[in-house]
Length: 564
Image (cartoon, rainbow, N blue to C red; front, side):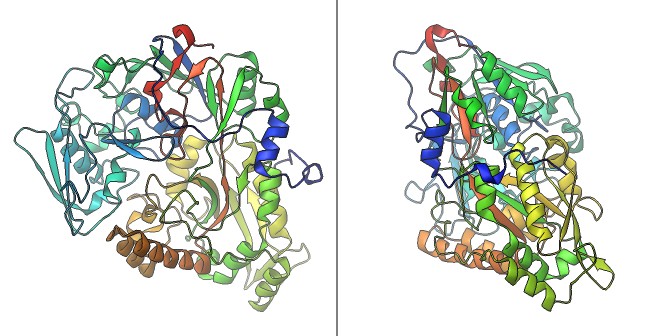
């Protein structure tokens, strides 16, 4: 059993702002508009602590934010986001719209024009042929892409004679198509480098953690899995003529836990870090040489997911509903997140418009009603206080990642909450690289019954990748192994329109299924803290996507000497 880090009795119902200002003594302000400073000094080495080991550094081979953060530094996507969650052209000349003819009225034909004279880090041309190669690779089951939603709708693509334009033809309308290609995690791959490698061998090659041909502002210099990844300036970056990137080098250091991150901050040996331990605010108050940044537009949500390979969870809606009714969300926020989160019951935060539903019919926290529901369903308490029926016991394996103290806090609170309704949780946690790469996607009976982790949807509220029938592993990341044809039909409908009012109405119907069938339960929307050393500039974390490194090419340090 995980030990409680902060007793509930020490906490009060401070608002987020008052809590951060009072306890952290730092500026917890919205992230400003991104801009390139006019008095930039180039040079320097920036050091970042990563709390978890990436599980791959090849685009669309990972589901981890930590992979995305490094990918954003070494790959240039067709489109990239900013600190406001707004998309901009990267390798593409412009963002396709109905007005500029880049999107057909039926949303089935998408035309992307690439900038001319692009090259890979090895000097070879980067063009539409690489984009064409990439979508085909990701749709190849032998590659085992993390996400195929939208890509699997491509029926064909035409590449222009000059290799600067690619026209995608989709099997059906798909309004979020552009967002699929956003940020480094979904950047095109070099066709000339991988053409002669079997799809099932790419992730087994040295390139999986040491990509040798890339397109981003930086390129890999040192790859030491488990210890650090060093990237250096890519002189062939498409914005090199603008003086970008400003830094010479970035070192991503892999650390074992939150205590190590805090010690590095206290020693002043790192320039920035993310995913701070919100249960230890006094320690951050003492970091006088650092500034705190919180992006209030976060689209992240922490949730628990039911594994429908477990017959009790799959076949007993009342059990899932009782769990939803027994969770004390405010205790999770106040105790585990130390107030640094907001309560909502769907997967769409207020930052996603359309998507967010202010009037969603959230389950009411009511332990008595949850007990009544289970009583009525025939689940009887035994001498140990836990319920059973027909030789089946309400006892479930609950897992999350090691190294995040607030998740340990979540588990303790949830364990206590569910014990009040006669449900026992057996906790076993795993390193993130194991949890995301093999543990969740295996999902067979005997692995986990309930899993907790943080999720988000990049630049578009389309959430079909989470629970679509065609995204069950190994085809995607539907780690619930849940399939609902009515839900699939709604996913298709929201993908077939760009009208925000129509899409919002469909999202509301999707939420109704979530909140009556309970394939997952949203615990809260966290507002993650980012910490950066004073004397650095243009550190503008994003609400989604690559988060900390979203604009890494714009980072710079006073006098070209990074403080760390």
